Length: 364
Image 1 (cartoon, helix red, strand yellow):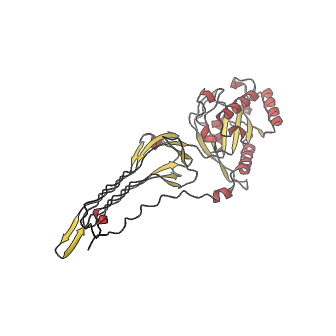
Image 2 (tube, helix red, strand yellow):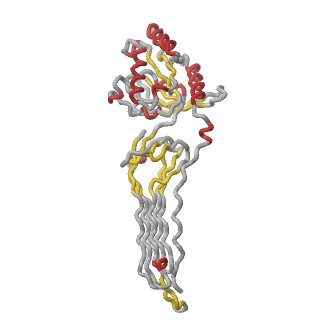
Image 3 (tube, helix red, strand yellow):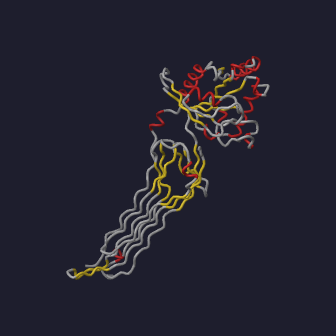
């Protein structure tokens, strides 16, 4: 099951209470206060994992709580710290604060770790309140509460190229021929109900040995207003470097002008925003095994006027797949983020642990 949205509640552990105790032993005539400190509450961390590709584990288990610190004891014994917990999310997950809507963090690298809820500080025992004039203190501190936060998680697939177009234009068939992905394929609209991700191997190309390609459910006119499956899945191609726009040039589409098909989908991408309509685009005429020559000619002429790369393929027979694969690889390599920016990436720093309490001022 592919789940790309989830809401969670996290609660960090509470700090343990400080202890009030006094030490009086047979051979220790000047004992005094000996209350230990409470343990600090456990933190809640979130880390990106390469072994996860969906948020389904958060959908059915939305609440997480770290361990609380234990209370201090006599003989200056401090309580144990609460056990922290770490939540694993797929790479590409964005974490939003549910109350403010602010973006907390965007996981774009593997093994990124952030603290999303800080545990409470443990209370001090009465040993820390002793002075030369106050040698039998009864004061001690209670542990502080750990943070409780509500977050909204959104997953955006990290792909180099994205397939867009009307339903049933051959996107799922194409990704199954170019990669090892096995999406559902059938001869009716909206066969694809969730995004698919595949890895395309390019052994001969010198700079790009492979690239990832994403297939999202088809769009129709009015998708930005919620028609069809809407535009809820377009977030998965926001991070792509290249768009591959598939247009059906056969008579089985039920639409007369393929140029209008291209313009309609481009308009829906513009309505969605996030720069999708300005990404480098390759126009691909599909179903060449049953193509209408007039439709093919119109689409090819339009691509030439717009100076857009144009390829004609048949995913069933394999016609034109290799030239298209290498063209996508070349365009991805030209528009892929600069490796220097990846090298400059600085991992988020985790919060420093609570400093130890000041030394005891117990009278002697």
